[in-house]
Each structure stands twice: as structure tokens, then as C-alpha cells.
Length: 219
Length: 219
Image 1 (cartoon, helix red, strand yellow):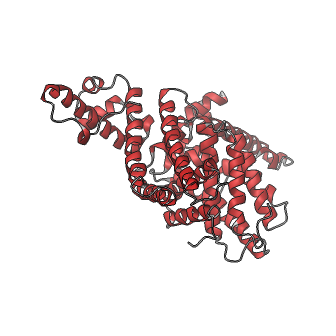
Image 2 (image 1 turned 90 degrees about the vertical axis):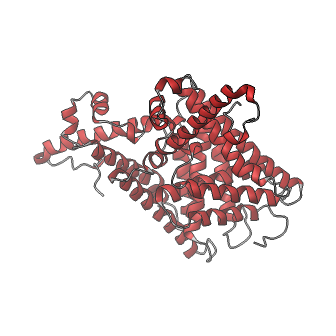
Image 3 (image 1 turned 60 degrees about the horizontal axis):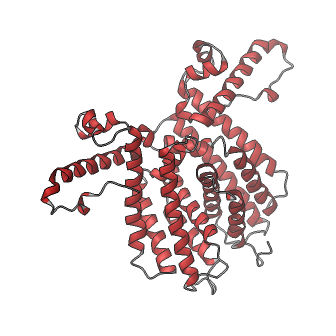
């Protein structure tokens, strides 16, 4: 899965590739602006023209980096996924495998969700925009969602392997139930403006786990 | 909350109101067509022109019934809600109050969801379309969602009152968790096409209830 490198990760010390470097920086800046725009107007609201305006570039300047609107949309999906992985998954890897890591993963997710209350989530809005529109943008969205779902299942499996969750725990079922919490916290906090939605999601997460803990829940 | 009467509930036996009757039928037919269209293109995709085309009417003919696109959108939200209430809530009322009624409610919901896999849910797509767009359409959506949420909480409270659920059960928390299951089953079945999503949701519902049953779960 190719994605635009973030400026911080670019090999800035190679003078021979200066032009390439500048091109990559511009491309990354375009994707960053497009991500901000998509948060407001959805992936379907993105257009080369709108991005050119935000970037104060010509349309042909944007076209030089993205051959089509679709390519731009896919880059946005991949960049969103990249940031999501960084914030939610890679940070959780610092915790010991098993329940501590699974809890960290959910905590990170809730933290990110709290920040997205005002901007929206590309996985959620994208699913509504593309649920009945086959094509490469939908495929990119499904692929990224499948990737994080596999990571959640893996985290649950590790918790089982470590003996932190009962051996008969079904990772796919647990991942399904956790996904429900993510969706409902977005819906209630962002759309209904229900106070305390994140706290309710945390409580629900403890409820879900409590059914799979080896000893009686001590939460 | 005013809504267009369904043809079945019209006072067909009053000859004096024949013209009025015909107008109501036409209005109901327009809302029905708009509901079908909204399922495909979203509430935001609705327009007087598109409906006129579907109905093979003139634009001014549609305008005679709905003064604005917004009014049409609100009528669609209310009609969707009306049907949802009929299928999910009123049917559940035939079951004895308490757990049987709560289970029937969830079962009806799952049945409806299974049928909506191909058409989508106005509550879910509408939330994404209108989450950051204040106005009367958003208000109508929020009002209808609040209405069914209150009904779920009431059903949980009745189950507590009947002694079917533990007295310390929090109806709002349970309603929140059930809402998560509705959202995830839509997402996984409709967008990801995950096989067995409805079965997973039913299992998760049993998990949720099991924490609040007076005696050890016998499901």
C-alpha cells in the first residue's frame, strides 16, 4: 500500500534528490489539506478544484501530483489510515502484550475519537458515502478497515495467549463488539451531542471484557 | 409531529373531502417515492426535480405539496420514523412487558436491519450527512432518534420493574450499548459485507443482557 511520506520521515539529507524531495513535500501538503477538507465535506466533496483553491495552486499544479480525483481520494484514505495506525496502534505497542495493550488500544482510540467529535471520521463517513458505490475508493476504504480489524483481533488473541482473557474468547466477536462502541460513541457525541458518551463507551468496554476475564471482574 | 397519513389510515368514507383525500394520497405517494430515492442517494440527494421525474409529475405539481426541498426531506425523515416505529416498536408491544418485549424489540430491529442491508438506514446516513449542518432537517432527525432512544430506555426500565433485569441496571447505558450493536451490524453487513454480522449482533445482545440478569445467564 503506497502512501505519501510525512515530511518528518523524508530522507532530507540527500541533496541529489532535492527536486524529488520538494515534489514529495508538496504532495504531502496537498494530501494534508485534502484530509482537512474531507473531514468537513466528505471524500465525495473533494475535488481537484477545491484543493487547488485551498492550496492556492493552479488546478494543473494539483493534477501534476494526482492524476485524478479518485487518486486524490485514495491518498486521503491511506493517509488517514496511516495517522490512525500511528496514534492508536503503534502507541499501544509500547504496552506489554495482552490486556494492557488491548486496553491501551481502546484508550488511544477513545482519545482520538474525542478529538474527532468536531471533524468526523473518514472510516465512518466514507462507509456511508461508498457503501453502494463499487470502485477503487471503496476498495481502499475496505482494505484499511480490514487492516485495523485484523490488528484488533490480533491484540485480543495475544491477550488470550497471555492468559489475560479466557481461552474460549472469540477474537472476531470481541472485535465486532468493540467496533460497535467506536461507532456509537461517534454517533452519540458527534450527531446527538449526548454528554458523557465517551465515558459510556469506556464503561461498555469494561462490561465486554468482564465476560472474558479468568477471575471475577475486579474493575 | 405532523406526518403524511398512510393511505390505509385515511378517512375514505367522507365524500365531502374527496379532493382533500386525493391530495393526501398524492402527497403520501410522493413521500413514498422520496423515501425510496433517499435510501439510494441520501437525504441530501433529494430534490424536487428528481422526485418530479420519478413521479412523472411537473416540478410545480410537487411544489404544490411541498413548499421546499427541506420540507420534503423532513417529511421523509418523519415517514421513515413512522415505519420504523410500526415495524420495530408497535409489533414488540404485543409481547409481555419486560424481557420478552425487549427481546422482541431487538429481534424486530435485526429483521428490519437485514432488509436494509441493500437500501441503507436514514438514521445512520442522515447522521453523517447532517452532523455538522444545523437546521430543521437535522433537528427532525435528532428528534426522531431521541424518540426511539426514549422508547428503548422505557423498555429496559419496564424489564427492571418486572424484575427481569437487576435493579442497578442503567437504562441509558444499556440503550447506548444496544445502539452500538445496531450501528455495527449496519456497518459490517452493508459496507464490509462481513458474513454473519446479524448473528454476531444477536450474540452480543445476549452478552449485554447476561450482565444484568438476576440469576446466572441461562441462554
